[in-house]
Amino acid sequence: MPGRELRGALGNVSLKALSLGLERACRFVVVVASAPVLGEAAFGRFVFASTATALLALGTDLGLGVWTTRAVARNPHEGGDIVRVGLVLRGLAALPYALAVLAVALLRERGESRAAIAILGVAALVNAFVDHFGSILRGYERFKDEARLNALRAVLTGVLGFVALHVGRSLASLCTALAVASLGSFFYGLAILFIVHPSMPPASRRGDRLLARHALRESLPIWIAGFLSLLYFKVDTLLLPAIAGDAELGAYGAAYKFFEGAMIVPAVLLAVAFPRLSRAHRDPESQRRLEWQLGIMLLGLGFAAAAACFFAGAPVVRLTFGAGFGRAVASLDVLAWGLPLLFLNFGLTHFLIARDVGRAMSLLALAMLALNVGLNLCLIPGRGGPGAAWATVLTEVALTLGCVGALRESRSPQSAPAGARTDRKAA
Image 1 (cartoon, one colour):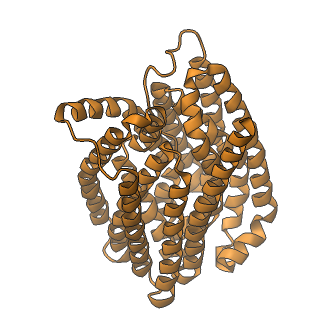
Image 2 (cartoon, rainbow, N blue to C red):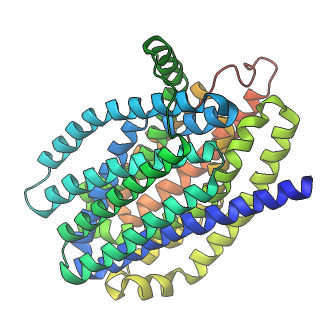
Image 3 (tube, rainbow, N blue to C red):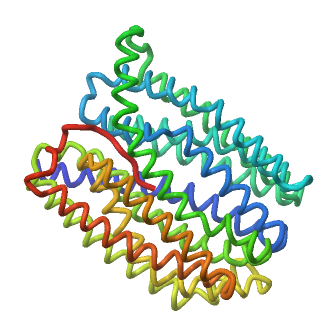
């Protein structure tokens, strides 16, 4: 039995790694290919637009993605009600998101920057729903279906992105291709969802209202922590163009793509392990053992990724982005120091989510945001991209210390029992 369970876990990790790896690789290759076509300044505008819309799209999540995975994993017999209420709440959140994207677009100067924000705003919203479909499938541990969904999104992104760069050779054509790819994966994900739930349980106004209140009570702390975490992780992208210009952001964005791309490794491991972590709240000893195993594995993988970026970063950057992006190497050298902690923190934040430690996560994320903004404002004016990189690394150090303290507190006798609440979310 243990051998069969291990084989199943390894199979799920392999499926998740292949599908998510393919998706991230296709998106990364398209972004890399776009850099020399667009040039540093236009590439910087693309990085800004994609970051701004991604941050706004998180507002439609409300923590419901992670909540859905955890709730379905713990109570699969109530899956139909959980899925229906989660989708309705996310649909209602789409309206203020649309207004926010419109406001950001209007604040930018006319031309391709404004168009990029509008088009990528559509793509980000659609992608948010595709990610939610994936959360539902993970809750049921239907990793094969999720793998197909991710693979289709990867293929559409890669094919349409390259066609746009070859034919249109402009920021607007690239953004349009990414939006069409998102729509294609959305309709496919919807079809899978109908297979999983061919008929939803009959809606009950009172029951749905109670479940929605329960869901938001548990998911909103996850969302607040997740939003603040993503904001401190991305705030340098918003500050750099205002302080140092679009070209400096373009160079830093090239380095950051390697740093960000490395997150596929912890993302795969935690996506597969999270349902098991969520169920383990009934067995604290088993939960701690699983956390230690995952933590050691993540730290080791982080050191391997750091060594690759530090020692091979310069030739890889120049080979990938071209000689015009040589300034990215200095930022990547700094970011490499933060990769081991980035990997570890990915696990630590998921451990806190599985333990239902909501308030501590939100306070911790708020503290990290304040710290990161302060560091960026101090370091970017004199150092540009490398200064933003140091701000990221120092924030990861502080986050590790905060997460370890929160985990210790959650194990104390005074802490609320695991399972007294229900959901939350990591970046």
